[in-house]
Length: 432
Image 1 (cartoon, rainbow, N blue to C red):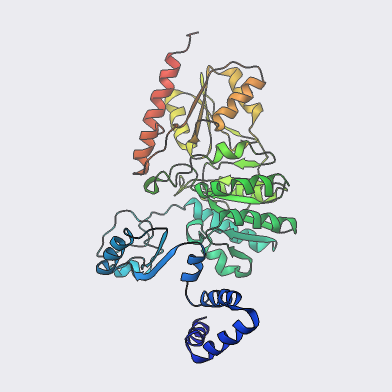
Image 2: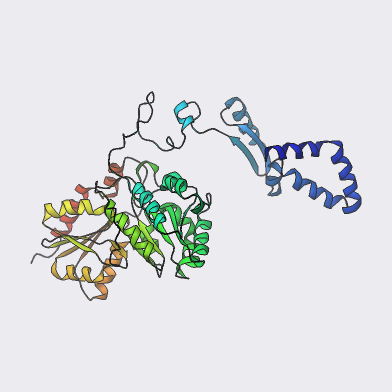
């Protein structure tokens, strides 16, 4: 394209172009000739494109040159109408290590600026993203129908290795989540098995496509939903606070919430086998250190499992909340259920626990309103059971960025807060 652009630029400024323009005006007329000229110029300079939309295009300018950037911004304030300033910057500018590897330094915590980020500093535990990456490659090797789709999140969603090993089955649609979902629907219609790797917060942008293009047609599209729950320093725009709420109400969906690394791998396999829309929703970062089993086995749909049998209180944990639920179960002598499926929920297990316990407590790293706690309450209502339910999840306000444990405390989902809220609710119940 570089050579073509140079050729077009010379053509548009030389005598040959002037002769062609005069000839064009005789044949097409001046108005149509001018429009053709503008569109040809648009192949050389982006200004015509933006000017077609009514913008006054300025640039491109060097965004690191403050002596040029600041006066430009000051002058733009004096101009009337919509302005489009094209600024070019380099990621990591001024820090050689970041310039050399901008992906590694995209979102970082504390590190020694002289030594840079050291490999292996993140610990030995697998992240859920790595679990997905390994599963995706293993599944692709076993099934040639699998197509991996990402909306410009190759690194973040764990598709680097997949692209390297299966380049013909890897599709990056760019920052176009709606297109990613509709594209997956089209592939499913043709008998392929698309896997859409996407952040929870970004799937919100494609909600209409998820409902109308996939769920309504009951297509076997699988969603690997990363960053479910709180994401620490990325803040309110990136917390996966709403996915369970907005997925549970969609017909035909199966929604799973893995509690550890091995369960995540098995759930990904389970979802892939289904002939309907499915989602596996997992958190950012590492799990509890469970080593995933290489062998893959489908889980029974809509069935949870009992992890501890206790008295009075039954803790129903979804996904990442199981670790704290097990610890609290030991402290409070409570029963603990790993619910596994947000949809279809294990209504039989819910009813059984409600009949044998004084208080049902649901734990989810998702908005409390319309989340899985609400679904548990619905199950009890359908079964005509009146056992009290304490729903513990994310509060009804946006949560700011911060250290992961800090914002869990702010949200009331750290272990101390959970214990205090459970004991307070127990104390308020009639004593038998």
